[in-house]
Length: 417
Image (cartoon, rainbow, N blue to C red; front, side, top):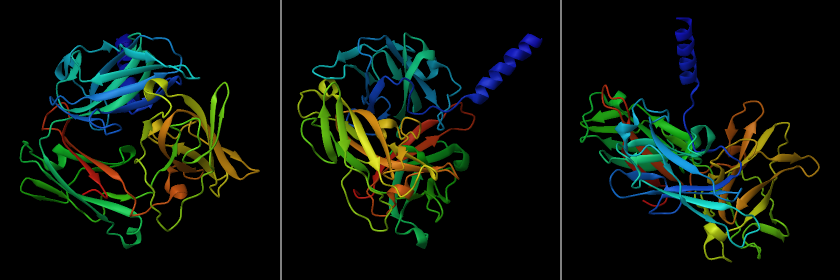
């Protein structure tokens, strides 16, 4: 009896301690992860069920050689916890497969092996809509996981319309962007709209700044209306900073110096504080990055790596908090790898990152020592005029169902109507 209670205690403790899945890298040798719908590079990783659409996963292993990588996908709820269903209910084919598409780098100072995977494929394919977590791991051992990516599988069963307007709060009109939207669920059997449907809004595909809408402002027939003055109000933030290292021979945008010896070193021009009241337009890629190489023929195979040196004048010190550099290239993680050091003599924060050639968007995030809350606005500023993408995702859980489905998706842009 005691042994049974101990096993039950361990199981309950593990279940309670489980964390939602996120886009993460668990091995420092794994670099340059791309994951997107093959229709457009760097796009949001959403595919329509049984449409023939695929997502492409690519990554580099700096250890070189070939390693036995395996992959699997698992169904999750809207909050990225594993669904309580068997693999047979959400998968066609097998539960895991070996990753066999890889090539070795050529003509690069940094040697690496480049891996690619397309999903769905003849071996593994989702059977039902919803959130899926893609796991890649070594030797068929899921305890040796190297990365995870979030995959969105859509069954278009609702209509979505939306508008982007300025904030209803007079004090936020110059800084914020508000999204009003409607969901038409006539194609669904909805008994309780407040419980059966929930909507997630993402700005530039960033989950850490997402906003949930679980209760509609009003219901008109089969149309749910979300337009309350106090909801879905996002800081517009600022256009992303960017740099261009398509060439490691010629200085280009934001590049101060390039050194080539046993390794590539790129010193970028110093970055100023941008938390100013006036908006200044500059083109960006909404936080994304693109692997490009002007001296080669296939950037994913002959693009080289370089130590990129960044410096920031933030009018703050490390006694007040910590500065981080983030973008899609590091999944917007504010961790030890993205944290900047502080030079009290120069009064600047600095760091270096080991990145592959290409065009990168990035920004700085400040974590105040008092609150400990990461926030990009103290360094980057926020403006209503900023060009942003918004992803609107509609989830549906029928009464007594054991999983949630993704039944609606809409991509919005503040400039493109």
